[in-house]
Structure formats: structure tokens, C-alpha cells
Length: 240
Image 1: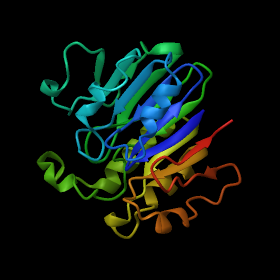
Image 2: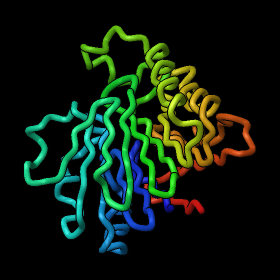
Image 3: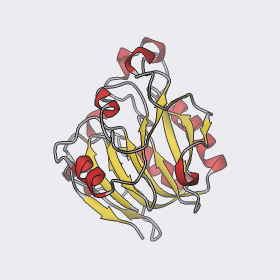
Image 4: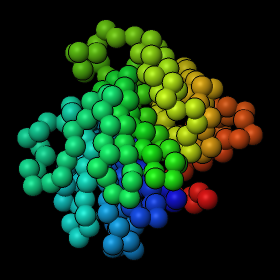
């Protein structure tokens, strides 16, 4: 697979027979358009972890119109924003979608702020995890959500992590928020995740351009985990 960083928490992953797009909000390097152009026959699966401008852009409904498109979207995204003509699966934590191309399945897990996190499994057994706003800390925009204003992010995180780990001993790729704006302990979620689950390839995200702090941090001193810090939109890496 080829993993390309789009911006914020957005990634595009090119598989042999499909393209996955996680939390598209912006594409300053026009990388997604280039990916779509060079893979004109591949279906595209757009995944949206929650309704926040850093993770969701209604422009996804206008993209890839020459491709077969699928959408897996957290149910906190307002239905009125979703075109009724598109194939859209709304999900809550615990839901599984198994109607995607090439044997791809998606399971939604809890997040600690809004929406969900995603575990994508390919027909070859590769697992790709995108954490959305899964964090041990209060993400900067969470206080705007009255329903979660008084929640304990540490407790919520451990509960979510235990649920994920109980069903997934290892993952091929994990993308987890590492946001210095959240304050001391901003790397804890990534470290805890990799202590509980074997991760082959780790990608920090949601770091708002502060890659010097994020990229130099050793999350888990494991010989089996490769850390890939894609610093700028358009950066990519090929994973064998």
C-alpha cells in the first residue's frame, strides 16, 4: 500500500484494488486529485470519523465522480449535508460495514471526543486503524460539544482502547492524533495504543504543522514498529 498525507488528519491509502480516503478536510498539495487521476479504474472509499472542519469537508461528495464511490460516515454528520443519490453508510461505534469493494470491511470503534475511530481490514488481512479524535486528553474543540463537556478523556480512552485491543492484537497501520496543543501528555494516546496493540507502521497526525516536536518523539521503543512522520501535505511512503 502507499500512504499519502493530505493535511491535519487526512490520509489517502492506495491499495491494489481500491483507494481509501480518511478524514479529508484539505488537500493543499492536490495529492488526492493526482492519486485519482493515476488510478482511474479503482473504487474510492471515503471515511469520515466525525463532524468537525479539521476532519470533514462536504467537498468529498463532489470528488472522484468518474470512480465508483462509497462513503462510511460517522452518524454525527448531519444527514441534510449528505446527497441522497450517493451510497453512504452512517455508522456508530460498534457498527461493521462489509459491503465495500474487494472484500474490504470497516468496523467503527469509540473515540473520546466526537464520532468514531475506524478499523479497516482488507481481504488479505491487513488492518488499517484511523483514530479520529481518539485521545487521552481533551482535544481543543471538544469543549464545544455539550454532551461531552464533563467527560473524562483518560477513562474514555482506556475503555475504547480495551475494546479495540480485545478484537485486534495487531494492526498493519495506525494513524493516531498527536497534538501538541493539547498540552503535556499529548503523546500518551499513541504510546498506550502501541503498548496494547502490535503496530507495524505508525503515523502521527493532527499535529498542526508542529512536526519538529512530533517527529522526534519515540512513542514506543519497539524494533517491530516503524514510525513514519509525514511532515508536509503530499508526503508519502510505500509499505510492502
